[in-house]
Image (cartoon, rainbow, N blue to C red; front, side):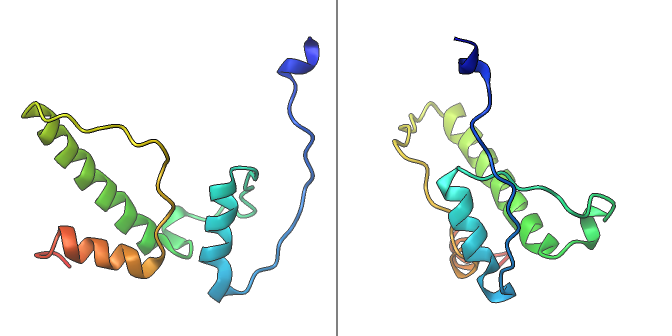
Length: 106
């Protein structure tokens, strides 16, 4: 019974990925839900990291969608729950989503 509260067996691995394949590779690993990433540069400021602009854009889109969701709920419109979480969009799809839902800003 004590094993029920123990962690699963883990292995520490280091991956070397080409920059062009980094987004897809990390996305697939994240979707699998079987990996944990370790920050090898904890002393680097968040604004000095690669892909910071992409993360900001995603955060901003998430903020806007939360606002829209709150407004829809305020009007009493039911939003059905999704059965399965959507997969992470690729960078081009993110741009398309921005233009589609926020054309004045895209």
